[in-house]
Image 1 (spheres, rainbow, N blue to C red):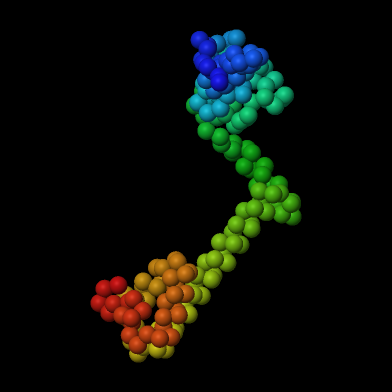
Image 2 (cartoon, helix red, strand yellow):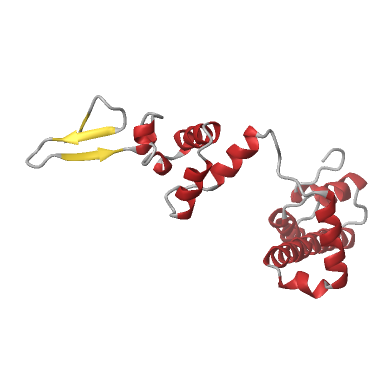
Length: 190
């Protein structure tokens, strides 16, 4: 069984052979713990990175990144931006250069993974919208074929519904329904 020592984050077991467990996220922010603090997580890692930045220990942070000790490198960037009270931005000159590059070499955009992902997401979203629109149109057309009059509020409800399963369920109900109310549409208010 491990017991806490007088040092926060350090636990000791005295059975047979003396064993120690060190929990970096519980260590104090003191110089003697600096070698283990890059292994901390959450708030403790944020506090350690902020302390290093305040004390000018940039080389130490770079070394911990280079040898892979810090388990969340994004914390360093976030803390630097916080200390500088900055938000990541793209400068106007960079935007102009990117614009010129992609105007001259549009085929290069297709090779970049970020654009491939964006294009794939856009196509997927477009397909979903197309399916949704087709389902709405089909439902309205079938209602108009089955029932002589379809109130505008029913049409509006269908056009504002973005749940494909609900639209599909309504389509199935049209087959056996003998009134709009049996499908779930009331004549006056929807």
